[in-house]
Image 1 (tube, rainbow, N blue to C red):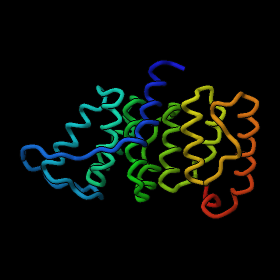
Image 2 (image 1 turned 45 degrees about the vertical axis):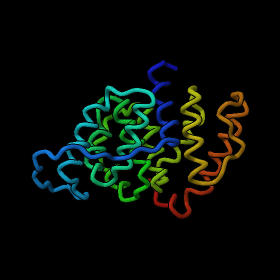
Image 3 (image 1 turned 90 degrees about the vertical axis):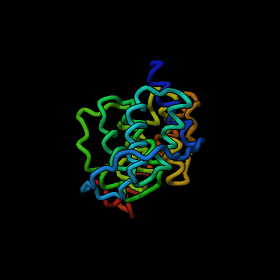
Image 4 (image 1 turned 60 degrees about the horizontal axis):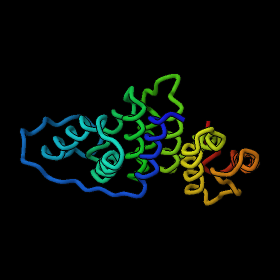
Length: 208
C-alpha cells in the first residue's frame, strides 16, 4: 500500500472521531443568488466555504480531518461545493468531500450523489468511499462494492468497508480486517451469501 493512499484512508478513519465548528469572519461583498436547490449560505459563510475549499488540497493529517468535520458541520449551505469537489480529479480531494457528505447523514444527498458525472474508470479508493458514503446515507445500492472491499489487500480499505457494513446492517459475520487471509475470505463469503439472500428484499430489491 502506498504511503499516500494509506494517509488518505487514515484520514477517513479518523474523520468519524473528530468534530468541527463553523466560525465567522469579517463581512465581505454579498454574493448573487444562485439557482442551487440547497439552502444558500450567508455572504460570510459562502466566503468561508470557498476559502476552505481552496485550502483543502493542501491540508494533511489532523488538519484534513478537522476540515472534513468543518464541512459536515456547515451542512446544507456547503452541499453544492462538496458535490462539486466530489468529482475533483484528485482522489484525495474527492474522497474528503465524500467523507464530509456522508458525515452529514442527510439522505437528500443520495440522488445528487448518484447523478454526479463520475469519471470512468473510477479510482478504486473513490469507488469504495462513494459506496461507504451512500451506505451511510441509507442507500444500499453499493453494498456489493463494500463486500468486495473486504478482500482488498489494503487493511485500511478492509476496515472502512467492514465498518460501513456493520454500521448499516448490524451484522459482522465474524469478519476481522486484521485476520489472516483464509479467515477473512470465509467471513467475506458469508457477507456475499447474505447479499444473495437479501437482494430481493426491501431496500435491496430496488438496486440495479
